Length: 323
Image (cartoon, rainbow, N blue to C red; front, side, top):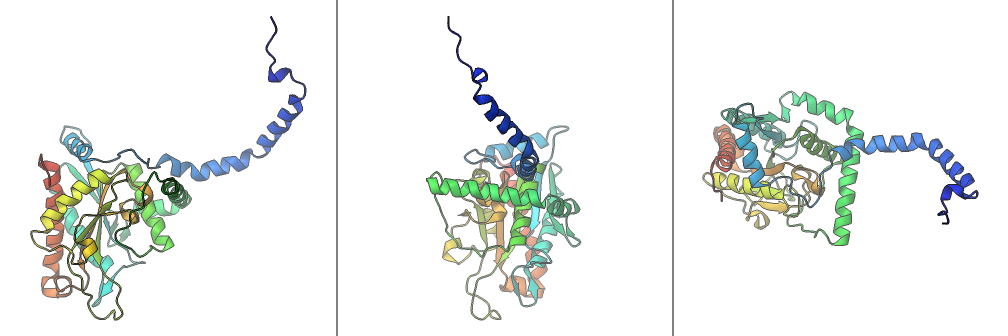
């Protein structure tokens, strides 16, 4: 019987193998650096085409929290914008200050539920210390994560596996703001949050910024249905909308009238499929509306906005059937 000819018995292969081996050793440091750069991103990468959050998963997480020794249902409250990029402004008011006021009230409301752990991403003192450190210490990981998720999304759009669906156009987030938002998404993935709430006040481009715009009302944005966290987000968004409608009217901007609006571009709710948790972005009103601008009703308005949001989420978590 003839022996099968193996590569190691071919004398012409040996020099080539030695050259390749030396080359790999010489470039080992380079590949180590590349691997390290992407390691953080890969560990927290969100997977396309796999549901990461559904109504059933959210209900199970809340039910598990009710059991003795169970981990609490985790909610991250993100007051939109910050002291550097303060968002919309009108009549001497800044969006960043208004969202923080609502966030504080909302955290107080969630504290009434012993099975919920609600954490503010930002307070009067700035970003949560752990999150602030994360932005600095894991900046390269965040940048790599953003690039990785974006590349995957572009690939799926190009192949037709994901369809482009833009309903409402948005201003592009400045680079540093975008990095923070992707950082929040990555950190929330690693921390295992069940729900992420982004709080905002709306505005619209107009020629004279000293005068109010024409749209009024609240709007709600959720991840587009092709994203992994879409199913749970939509159901939570619907429950919040139902409660907000008890006191406020939905946006008169036609594209927002059918809230919750599915969106592919907002980083806060997981653009490029970058967030595993259910996520809802709420625009409580346009910043120039009287309910915000008039000092006599402002505090009451902000408090009730938080209350209705809390009640909507409690409705979803506790009731057996939802809108």
